[in-house]
Image (cartoon, rainbow, N blue to C red):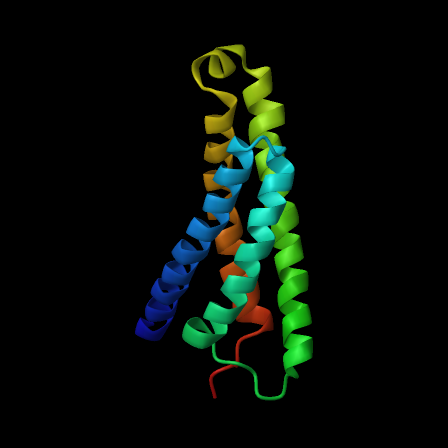
Length: 142
């Protein structure tokens, strides 16, 4: 159990680093006028590359029988699904909720709502990422 807790903590640290990469890119691009979904996609893609490198360096033990090319493809496919979840959550938070709840949109600037939606999406995708990477990419304990 302690090993799992240690792994979750390491995953969390890697996730925080990648979150700041992702969130920083989304923030900069959003304030430069880039559409929030495109900004979200750009931040997500760059943070996925950083996450791949850091995850296998510090968090997960590689499967010896899994070719690195195949490993990367699986990682990218899982991340693409995570990206879809990320974009969907941001869309729901901004377009379906924020823009349709008058009192909310009158109290909070849209750029702040976008950044808040990114935080919610990140939390959801972080859980998805840990579970799917543990199932599909991590070496099983003997």
